[in-house]
Length: 149
Image (cartoon, rainbow, N blue to C red; front, side):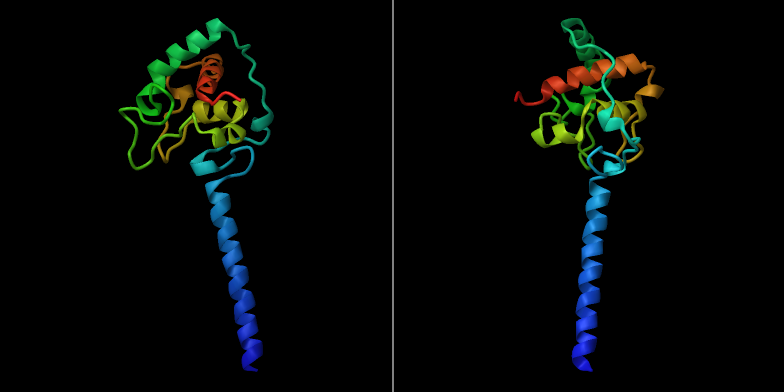
């Protein structure tokens, strides 16, 4: 009787632990398309959404200016998340981190910038006077911070 009860306890405890680990992992990383990641709301299919703005030297120059005016104060001059207005308790993402590349294709970055989030706080570009084209342009510039392959 004791062994049967102990086996049930161990099986139940193991299942609970596995479920808890899975829930924590899901909450921290909302999946391959970034959905739900740290408070982000990313629509299904965003990871496959192509950037409708063609990259060019002019687009990158405009993206740099938009970044400097709207993003640099938190994300930093070199995209490391170390800008003077960055929240020390919730540092902005480091765009130079190679692990971020796969999790943040163009469509995911667009939706993060366009919609923002409440916690940790990031203003929504759609409420800051930027157009969708401006945001796609910033996406091209932000990718310049990524390590070269």
